[in-house]
Image (cartoon, rainbow, N blue to C red; front, side, top):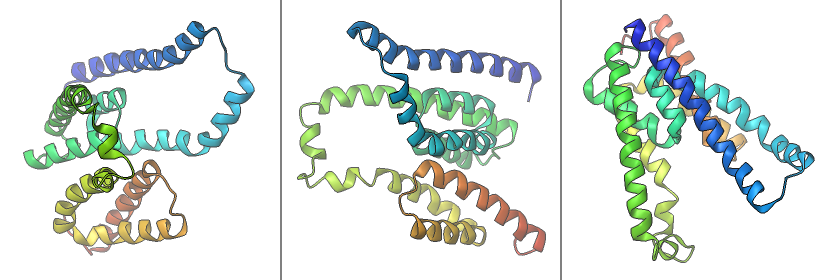
Length: 221
């Protein structure tokens, strides 16, 4: 990959990450300013304490585990636009799978960046359009009494199930360890968030595949 491209990607990526962070912080600050109120630091600290132990380590782990798969441009685009676990990661992997390129190659970098950018644009447009169209009936079809309600609760499992099926069919040996490990983990603590399970699953998968390859149990996939 061209060094000039990577340097510019890191430069603009860092700029937009900071701009995005400032925008996120500006929203509650402007609301407080408009209403003439200010939150107590003690209450903020108490609220952060309950989630920091889970979400802060998860945020670091996600960067470490997702970056090699998404590439430089895809990583910045994914973390700026958000929804990496549910959308950006599956889109990038599916695009690279269709193009038959590796995630850590120059071609994978380009495919990942383009697919995530297209996904972000399409998602924004679709969400805007359908929010306006479904606003009158959305509460009725997603409410507890709606026959469609169970479907809306299974969007993420259906998305990852479809994506995972093709990989399990081709690499079923290296899928055994992470499936067994995550199943046991969920049996012990079924309330673990997806943001924790996926990075843990990635690490277990990498370690398991490495050990099995060294032992000669699997060849080059």
